[in-house]
Image (cartoon, rainbow, N blue to C red):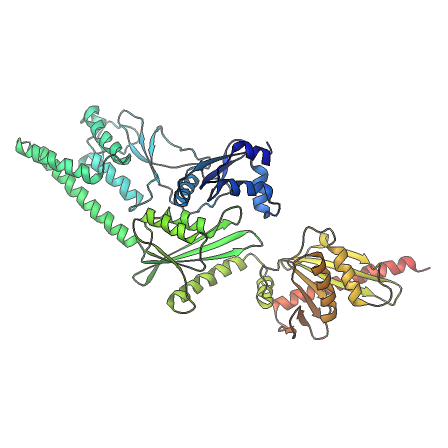
Length: 534
């Protein structure tokens, strides 16, 4: 089904904050986004025609849209984050080292077990049947949490009930239902108390208070052995809670530094986070996500911090995230304490740490390109990696035949299927400037695959003719001239040319492209001359 504006009108999408869920052909959720105005944001997907390729592919796969209204933007932030964790849509940001143990399950067995529950790509839980609780993303280690609960309520850990008791029985972590040492009714009392805690109807602290009352009652009636068992359990509970608090304190970094670098050419954002505790860098994590739809730095930060054990009080970023104020309020609601998001200043230790992050991220980006490509980007101060370069050259021997050629280099190597040759049609006599203008105009007349950089064989005059054509057509592509005499690079608007070292990889790549354009054009010129000779 093709989504049309008529269908959108029928859905009556409200102009309120909320979350939208986009579904594919099989009804599976493929993307989840949030919006301050649901109607405006959802409609924009189908009325705009300048989407990036990845967003365009998403729009093509949309078969249906559902939405959920919230009271405010903060609730929309939280709901979006929780739904993404639940359904793990294909087009959303997915943290590769995301916490996998966010849910707990009590199994449907005569003597139930407590297990961690995992979701598959379709959003379904795998494993034994049972009721799932969660997500649990705050507090200490998930292993410690599930271990604490199993020990408190003496939940068995064996997959199948054995004929003999295991170690857990002898260290008093289990009452051994395997040998009928405990009745199912008594065992289920602990399970029901566990359910109340997981459902939020009770708390571990309340459970401990009830156990203290039971211990005193057992002692009063002389059941000292039972009272001792409860006392030992309370000791273990207190010990584990202290360890859990210490773990949480150790895991909460006082500061965290996060940088982002966008490789717009490949549509990928690279993010790195450094945690600093007591002035010492304690952890480093690296992530990537696709630049498409509503995937942003802000949405990444929410996904990241809703999946970590603790949120720091200070987050220092390389740039200000979108919807910063709403993000801060959302994180404070998750953290239970004040959160500050600030960009690094121009100087000082924080700027040095962010610069270190950015340096490492740039290295990650550059690894995907030939060494000459990022070098050329830096030397020419380009906004994107010049991965695709077109080079133009005019070839005229005498005045009777004039031709031109354009060659394309991709990631430093010739892409011969994209070579083009032209016979000059509108210019009489030797006029290199006008010929260059004709070549550029004809090459990009109906072109959809524009390069990242255009190189003209020549100096200021040839460069000026080429840029005039580009400006008239509305194409925004950086263009430079490479003058052969001194191998100078001319940039439009710059008074002086750039002179690179002869050992520069960027210069050698430009020379290779220029020489290849000259060779290709000259070969075409010679072939035409052979055809015209008597």
